[in-house]
Amino acid sequence: MLPYGCLLATALGLFLVSGFLGPQFLGFSLRNARPGLRLWAWLGGLYSLAFSSLTALACLAVLIGSGWSNSSKANRGLGDLWYLVLVSALPYIALASLGILIASAITKLQPAVAAAKETTDLLLLKSRESETFRGIPVRILEANHPAAALVVVENQPSILITRGATIDLSKEELDAVLWHELGHALGRHNSLNRLARVACVLTPWLPLTRDLSTVVEHSCEEIADRFALKHASMDALLGAKSKFKF
Image (cartoon, rainbow, N blue to C red; front, side):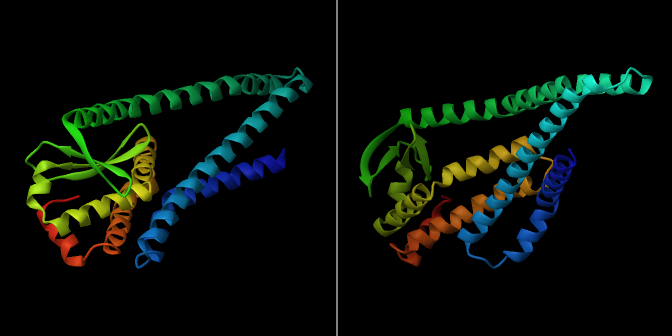
């Protein structure tokens, strides 16, 4: 069982290095990198955490199973008695720990998921589809406050924009906003931001996941801006950003 023990130690080491030292390394090495490279490098750190965690759990399951199967070969001495008690309890301890982790994750995520769904449903109820922009539905929300965002309804993206924004923006500025939101839709940025927020909620004690949400959000905004600038002028994009945040 030595190979599995070594693999377990390696997986735990990778988890700790990625989770605690990863932010310093990524922040230093990618400070001048393009937003796309920075985004995927940080997500790669998250995937490293997930892979090392699953590897460690698999190795631990093998070691527990091996100890369980070898318990029948133990002698009846006092030392072996404690060994039998420990090995017999380990599977139940592991199952209880897994159950606690799952219950904790559901408890943390369920209110946020319910609130997000309720907010999206309310916004869609108060809005109406007016047109499409490059194949993406555009919904107008009757509100005076200027705002724009990308929402996902039944796995389909829609651009939500308020009536106030359409009034305050010029035609060129409105096009820049729509191109920006289209960049978010094409890059599936809502899903990436959701993944980063879930990771932060589940492991708030890890520096990598604490910083990941901010890095992903900023990188996605830079990528959407770069996409918009391929189709709109810098003056139009900056003019729209000076009037409200989107």
